[in-house]
Length: 288
Figure 1 (cartoon, rainbow, N blue to C red):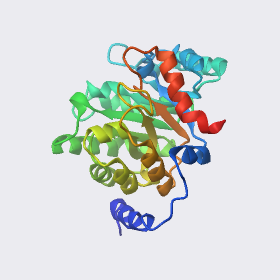
Figure 2: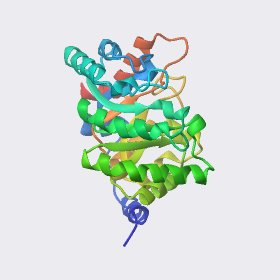
Figure 3: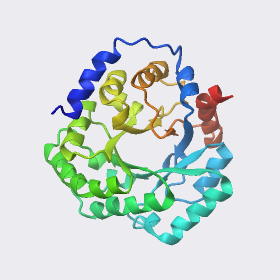
Figure 4: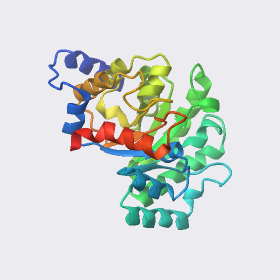
């Protein structure tokens, strides 16, 4: 029986023989009708319900919402706060597009027992808020590179929580500096369709990975959502090859859940709203 990685490798060979008809990243986006959101932490509203109003002021379709942090005990787990988010979402017309647990960067999932409860509970929160993707962050103290013991513990913990996520229709998205091969290895070891990659092109490039080849290797079924960012630069003004990325995404037939999240695409001296409106225009231009 072929593993997920073997199936994907076979598929990549076939994809290389196909003809790509899209002329640009814009053509790809136009065909796919992505909805565009932003991460609440990147607009200064981490785990803050007023982030939905700011998202509306920017003109975004949605907001990726933080579960919380250590200080507030992951307060989105509280039903009252969930209701506040639901109410604010209805008032503003801005959707809660997905969840994120960024605190895992400082309180690692690979080693801290408290995180198991956070991830377990986040599935219920996601279900209550009507979202299907939860970002699990693996940077800083949670970095998995060159850490086989850490990877093994993450696999162990994901194996325990994945059946619950799968049953409730929730995807746990791994965002890390690992290569596509390493991500696939973790997914194979967990053995659940509820665990996928939350792909961030900038992170992958910064880690020295070939973004286009990684997209082809992963394939559409292993990517749950994507981040659009250029650290310190507006989208389109940094070093990322967005046309090449667009071609690669089209080649694998990726459409995800229709969401792309803008993150950290702002020069230090630029007004946040203006920066994110620029980024939104960069991505939404083809919808006009």
